[in-house]
Length: 292
Image 1 (cartoon, rainbow, N blue to C red):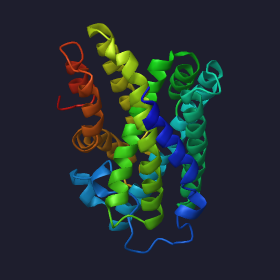
Image 2 (image 1 turned 120 degrees about the vertical axis):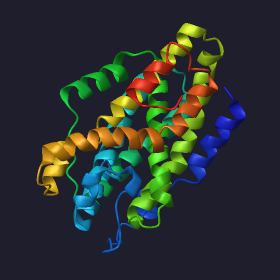
Image 3 (image 1 turned 30 degrees about the vertical axis):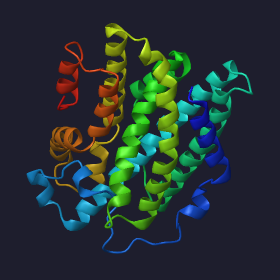
Image 4 (image 1 turned 180 degrees about the vertical axis):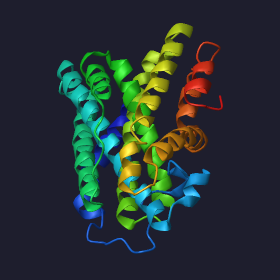
């Protein structure tokens, strides 16, 4: 591994910790002008049905969907912590991997606590993952090989980073959520650097089949996360006249929004190790509508 770089990341984590209790202004109340989710990430944004919603319903849609997103990331980080606790037992305590993963575990647990606090601050009520989501998530964390799980974790981290960038840069978003996103972006950047460095050893010797397999792993993880965001219950809560119609419209509309706004960073990662080829490109275009 790039020892000097990882040592630097460990030192920063120890000497400059970002504590959510201090970094995030939890006491700040949302104003009437605040929104909770950048509009272009709202599932119905741009669809004719979006204009039929009152302004209050549009804001409430964003509130419920950002709660869903934060819950999904906290849940996925919990799964990754489950894996790291399993994996770290295979390492020696003086190894650089062991030492960095200890720091990452500390930060990931803080992130879960921070997202939980943000959800409570918004009076959120997340829709829980389905049985299939839970089965796939726990199976991956407990039984998949380390390269597959690190790649899965990297996929989710990059997606969280993308969402966080939108939120922290949007001045219309409630300040608490902007600071939550800022903290998460800063610390996830370190985790992404480590995951890329860890995976470099596998990618370097990967042939066509393994690169294609890695590409599919990323694709399926991103699709997996996307299916956690748009929920019929949310449209019932905001008082839409026909929740089923709005939900189905939102699913199709969000496919386009997600492809346009959220896939740039992760497709760049896959491109770095030549993960797009005749065996994978069609699946990305079909399942995620990606422009690859």
